[in-house]
Length: 359
Image (cartoon, rainbow, N blue to C red; front, side, top):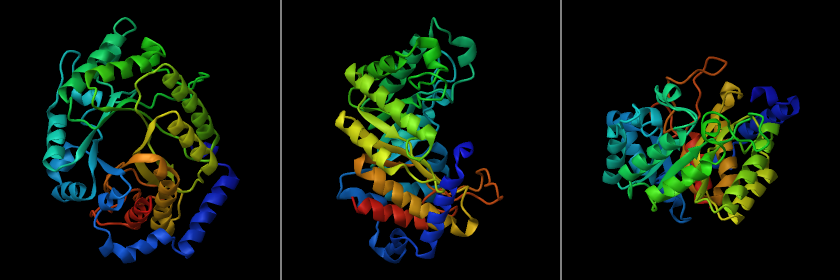
């Protein structure tokens, strides 16, 4: 992404951040109203929106304060790794459901909804995939995986990310990612995957999840265009896609393409798609250290004010900053999340809460 930053865009982004830090954005003033914010789910309740958090067995089992915070703050959990193919399908004819079973049970015991992530992806493939899967058996492998996993959890899942990140700059006019599923099955793999999912669990909402829509960058403009074309084709063919997931991995130092983003979600909504924010976080790597908290908070507020009105669900990528994450270019720890490494609320939390309460 850095190679696409024009000097003008970079100056514009950083200048806006510096200005916001001098007169802290309105969202940061919500820090003074902490006693009035009982939880993010309470802030969202009147609008009918759901707020969700990515987690997993390790965090839910081994970090009690994190588990308690998630249960108190959110309506739903999404699972980062426990349901991906490499963990749940370790051998061609064997499945390992123990991680996911723990996660689903935890959500039910704590009164939270559950989002399944993810069934068909180019990443997190099991070790056996490349040597075992070929053009003759790929469709069977994919559909068996979808059916087995979804039937195991049938009736317990609010939504499934059926296909994750089907788009990539691989040189195709339609913008579709080539490896592995398109190469092995053909472009119809998307339709096959969603029809298989609808048959396996008719109660779950079926989501097409993608990223890189938001910023004022040529690659994001192209992605908006090709994804909208895909969404129209799927709708024309009556493919049972219930919702579009927009991941929301955003950069604090790059402006949004505000009008174009709004137009995209208006068109998707008019096509009949529900819209879900699915992996929201803010990359602070381009921000001067002294401005990070203010910049990240402001970017959460800007994004939620832009995309939030269209979204039925707002999911955050991680609960707290993590000392194990790769360092910023300046050697400092990134601070992309709502809570710090001690699971204390940051300015980003209050910015998000105020934006969510305003829907």
